[in-house]
Length: 119
Image (cartoon, rainbow, N blue to C red; front, side, top):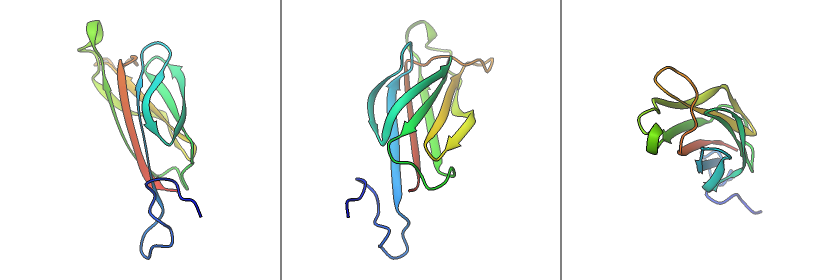
């Protein structure tokens, strides 16, 4: 049986099969993956909002997520928050967002997100 790389075998006593998904991408203009694991594509939903689509889905939409955004150049001081979007989690992906101090969505130069949970 072929397991997803990095997964703990479901046959190991006391362990669920876990997956780690992560992506770093350019969030300005057309989003482009710079590097990733278990991410098949990015959907640009609106200014500062993206959906990361998983290659292998999670068992339930209850996995843990971490997000950070970085802006450079003229928008360097504008990223105030990076978090799950209102549409949040599904077993097939996660919606994330970056916003300024007025809680307005802004495209970040670099966005990184991770997800850990049971397959």
